[in-house]
Image (cartoon, rainbow over all chains, first blue to last red; front, side, top):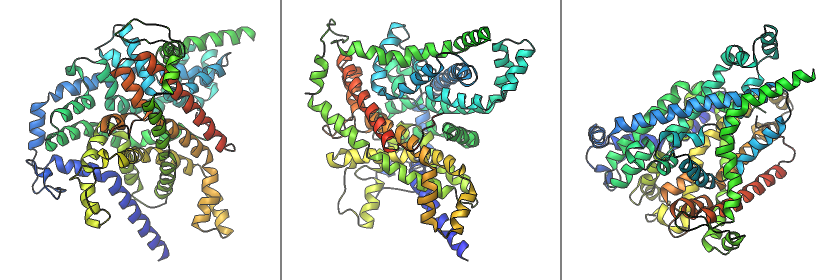
Length: 272
Length: 293
């Protein structure tokens, strides 16, 4: 009996918290399905009187969504590939090799966390201009092509690989690179999946840097295009709500399908 | 043996070369280049001159910059609130009942959605005729509508609230990982000694979460001082200077007004501040060891 009461209290708390965290999204969904502009009503409309997909149809026709989605997908793919490639290569020796300067590299990596992003952005802007990469997707992706966080995460994963594997590869006369590609990498697929997911989310949601680099709004990714839509149609709630739902849904779906790896990976980053 | 180590060290640097090259250009270079830049009046429009420490003396007389530093410090107050609530959330979703995975996912969704979307939703919810005002009026907490984001006295706190709301799930997951590493027999032993739920949390859970608390506090302090997206999208520092945080001010000086030299000097000052705050957090948690890897 006492246990039942305790469970009841826990469930009530869990549900209240879920309302707090999910409520705003559910309300957004509700607004996006309201026909006309009844969201302006006072008291504010919380639930639609009847459901219609007009907003979705109209905003899809007004904005070139396929183009923005393609832009976002290209930027995201580039970013993910760069990050997986570079952080695996960098983390592997830090986890398994003995060499001079290992601690130096480590200290340097940690110290990068103190610089305000706005300052870094200013120098990135100058660098990208100097490389003539302004207004290109590569200019959007390169400054975030590798992250210290991902290097830490992959190092953690590589530490879990038994040293025998490398030794046995050496006995067979394989080169370090071959050992890495053929023996080690297949064992860290879960870690790779995690940094892949982290970067999918980061690049999908990125809005400010693309606006700074890209002069041509036709090249904007979704999140950046959304701020543009908001500026243009701040009076048409329904459209913006539908547009926002369209931009948010893919990433939520990706997350829901991969949450197991994703959450374990995030947690694994700081194993004490 | 000596030769083996040398070849290993060669291989190590060869592996790390591409990654370190990118880090050098896009992570270390901004830090290094920011220093000489901060000693000039570099901007796109005029010729560049070496101006010595002028930018720094100017910064400390720049009323708006000082306000932005103060606002960034106020923003750090969000850190203990986030930590306390997310630890409680983690304890809650660590209980042994069914359906918890669903709740964990629900709490995490704000983390994975873009700040643009989150900011849009909250700007509507918090509008004059928005749902928040409506509900608070209905319950009787408010007697008249409040324009949360365009009132100087509330805007900064509202932004802090949004930052908290979006971040809770992230810290919850980190703490949850910590909780799951605590051996169950420790709780059993404490229970046998007659400890109630509250004493279990204070005497078993919190001490064992210490490394996690330290890690989460450090990253959220850094995050709070560097906060940018939500402020930039929702208020751009306004009304007046009430939400002008240091990152937003640096961005305005740098990428909106193209005063790269001055903005770099401001960035250096803020970097020193972040470093000092991190050291402070480490000192406060002297006992816990941090394991960022």
